[in-house]
Amino acid sequence: MSKLIMTADDSASIRQMVNFTLKQAGYEVIEAVDGQDAIEKLDSHLVSMLITDLNMPRMDGTELIRQVRAKPRYRFIPIIMLTTESQDRKKQEGKAAGATGWIVKPFKPDQLLGVIKKVLK
Image (cartoon, rainbow, N blue to C red):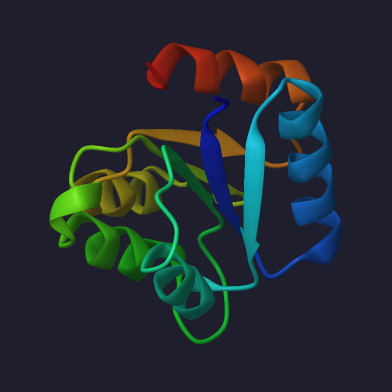
């Protein structure tokens, strides 16, 4: 059975690109339009990994990571921040919240898949 990865991003084009890249590599994908949507969907799906944007309406990526890490079944899953933000301060906030890795947009599909293969066992 292939692994289920959730992607949370308010940009439909980014969700579409990530979805296409992951499905081509054999992963199943569930999409969320923001952090709040992701939290609601996590309660009814068992995902192996989360890829999230930082800047989203209703709940940003950092708060999403904090809430995901508070759920016992998701305490140790890999969480990748996929964002346009590259400042060290933002990266430190993400890491402190529990992010496993950080990829700056725009991304190359091979780069994303390389990170996923590294962190997803």
